[in-house]
Every structure is written in C-alpha cells, then in structure tokens.
Length: 168
Length: 158
View 1 (tube, rainbow over the protein chains, first blue to last red):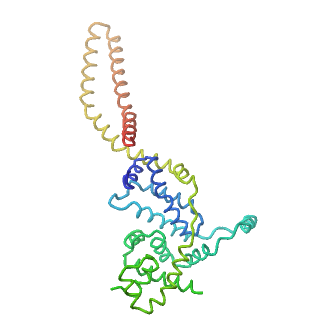
View 2 (view 1 turned 90 degrees about the horizontal axis):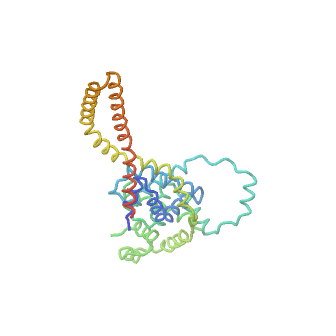
View 3 (view 1 turned 135 degrees about the vertical axis):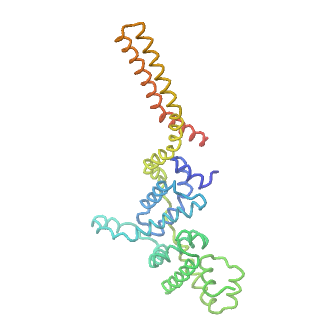
C-alpha cells in the first residue's frame, strides 16, 4: 500500500485517483476534526476547502514531514479563519421555524459542544487534537506551530477551565 | 517525578494511568480528590458523538479539485517538455545548414537544365516543403511529450 507521502507526490503531478485514495483514507478523522472545531457548522465546505488547499500546495509538500501533520495544520488554519469570520446574516424566519421543528440535540452532545466552544481557540485546538485525535504532544505542537511546553500549558489551562464549567 | 498538573492532565487526556501517575495519585490527597471530577469530565467529552461524513464527500472533493489537478499535471509535465525541446533543438543548426546546401544544390541543378524563372520557382517550392516538414516536426513535440507523460502515469498506476 502506498504511503500518504507517495500519494501526495502523485497528487502533485495531477493524479486524481491518488487524491481520491488519500481523501478516503483521511475522510473520517479530518471531517470529525472540522466538525468539532466548528460545532458541526459549515463542515462540508471547510472539508472541501482543506482538500483544495492540499491539491494546490501539493508540490510544496516537504516529504520529510508527516502528511497527517500537514493536513491537520491546513484544516486547523481554515477553522481558525472560519471562527474569525463575521457572523452570518440573520436567517430567514421560515428557516428558523423549520429548524425549530428539528429534533433537539442530546444533552451530552450539547454539553461537550458547549464546553469546547467556551474554550479560547488555542486551548480548544490543543484539546481537540490531543483528546479526540489522540495525537502525541509533539505532533500537536507541530500542527499548532508552537513548542511542546506551550501545548502542555494550554492543555492544563483547558482542563482547569473545563472543570470549572463542568462543576454543577 | 510527576507533579499535580501533569497527573490530572494525563488522567483527562490519556485515560490510562502510567505507574508515575498512579504513584502520584496514591500519595497526593489533593489530586485524588480531583480525580473523580476529571474522570467525569473525560466521560462528558467522550460522550459527544460527531456526525459521520456524508457518503459522496470524496466525489464532491474530486469534482471541485479537477481544475487544480489539471494545473498540477500541466506543471508536472513542464520539465519533461523542456528536456524534449532542448533535445530536439540540439540538431537544429545542422539540419538548417543541410537544408540550405540542399536547396542551393537544387537551385543550381534546376537553373542549369530549366529556364531560370522555372528553376527558381521549383527550388522555392522545395525550400517551402522542407520548412513545412521542419515546422510540423517541431509542432509535434508537445503532443509527443503529453503522450509520454500520460503513458508514464498509467505505468505508475499499474
């Protein structure tokens, strides 16, 4: 089986089938990473934009790096930009009514989402990558572009804040 | 040596306890008191399901990426094209020199046996034919290169 680094080299020369293979390989982790970052909003658009950036920059990929680190780095940067965007225009009242009729999310989902959403962005990034994707601190540091000590400190502060919020 | 911060962070983010952390928890009443809250928090975070990716996501990405992939393919073919062009241009001076002598020889021969105007007309046609053949040969280079790149890609897939 070809490695991710071999596949991205083929994508750099315009190979669509290799891109499809790469997409399928990383579909679930990438989709879930974005969904957790945005609380489930605009996930498909951000997912697609991540892959478009991958294809666009494939020729600049450094094969000494891990592909997953690079991929997650692109996705995290996109999510960061997404959070900085101004909020969307007020929704159409008809849409709001339709949404009100939809089943309410479960309490646990809401709780975890609420907790994550309340964290500062830097801490949320560290928690998602470390907790949900089980990445080692070194890789989280590489993705976030900061020293390992900073990741440790963000995780610690995130835990303190989450404990405060989760306290009944 | 594991401190209180490390112990509780490890408990939350790694779940399983390593011997250092277990030893610290056994010895530190403060961390032991907090461990239940940390484990509760871990359960809350773990309980959050995330939606599964929709089925046609890869197809959608591929469709959107088609123009970028085509651009990548064009860029990847450039070095091959440059090499082929350089190889083809190398004998060009010799070919032009040979053509020049051939046309001059033909002109001399034709004007010796035919009226000058007719000889010059036939020699001009001969020169034009040679120039056309040369142009067609060089124009085919990009087509050959593209074919070669496609074949190489198919071989790498196989």
